[in-house]
Image (cartoon, rainbow, N blue to C red; front, side, top):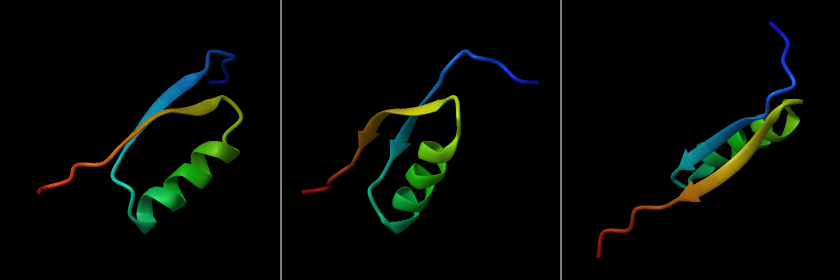
Length: 42
């Protein structure tokens, strides 16, 4: 099912897996990273 509607994705966390996932999202033709969040317990 191909579509021209952009898929906006939010990434929770900034660890190595988030870097790998963001690279995959960047390579997807209709996906974009809309937000990145980090929870910090201080």
